Length: 89
Image 1 (spheres, helix red, strand yellow):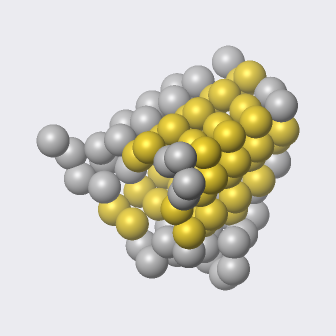
Image 2: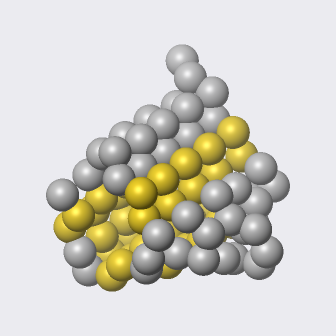
């Protein structure tokens, strides 16, 4: 069983599943998400990074001030821009 690191996360839920070895930063808002193993979502400030109805594959990194909604992101990607209604291969 792996470790989940939550750094004073602003809000998680509803309908959120977080796998082992995920790192979630302080200013992250998660709604209806599946966060798989090794995902890193880091942000500072108030709700700088938001995820809604999203699946993040293994080892995905989401940078500060990125909004991801209604999207599926396959493994080993770094998101540095906001996305909506996309499947990132």
